[in-house]
Amino acid sequence: MSACAVASPLRCKPFGPKGEAAKQASGRDDSMSADLTDTVSQRFYSYRRSERKKSRLQRFLARECAHLLMATVGAFLNSRNAKLYLAFRPDSHFDFDRYPRFAEFFQFFAQGEGRANCGDLPRLYLLLLNIARVIREQVPGDMAEIGVYRGNTARILAEAARASGRRLYLFDTFSGFHARDLRGVDEAGVPGHFGDTSLEKVKAFVGTHGVEYIVGHFPDSLAQQLLPQQFSIVHLDCDLHDPMLAGLTFFYPRLSPGALLILHDYSSGHWSGACQAIDAFMADKPERLVLMPDKSGTAIMIKSPS
Image (spheres, rainbow, N blue to C red):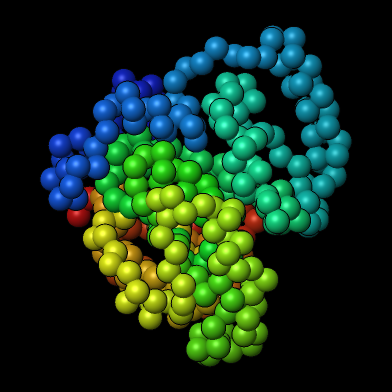
């Protein structure tokens, strides 16, 4: 995240087009008033200086206990190649309470996926911080996700889309891997893997207001829906080479300046097909990926102005 994103709102210069510029770039009025935009973005991360809710004594005792735990248990776990490690919660969260709906978003993130997502807080913080940035800077365009599975990240994106007056487009077979994609580097994959979900269950969890569900094999499923020409957030969680490459090919030219592209599993080591597709596609692009230290190696990209 840029230094601008954590600066005072009066000094923060937006990356993407805003206000009238956003309207001209998108061909429609995606702009909101500054006050409304600020209010919506603060549901995910609050840029405003807020009064600390914890007393000085509470913060002192929490810090001392945390430092003691980190110096003992943390030092033991973190110096080894253990599955778990111990980390501090961001200062912006504990000291300044800048995630007003964190408990609610955590429940969305963990529902049905608690064994994996409960321990993947860096990914959740990444989503909340960058969603707030896109909304605050009024980056024009709707949102999309390929690879919905049970809808954990889709639910968070749906909350953002509904709050900011956008639409969310969700692409998935909702029956697991398609056999057509299990070739080449991905030939060892199993058809139907990640099939323990359903369209009905995801709809019940994510909701239908402001959300379009496009069911089928991507990119063939694109024929089912007339899609907008601009997107502000795109999340690709395809796992495999062919759908990842197809997703990049379709969505990259439709990303607005300042838009957020999230690429899950890039550096996890488990999904080499997805990684190869991303590297090949990005080789001649002006942007560079920023690699995140979350559980499954997410990479993010901000679309350049040109």
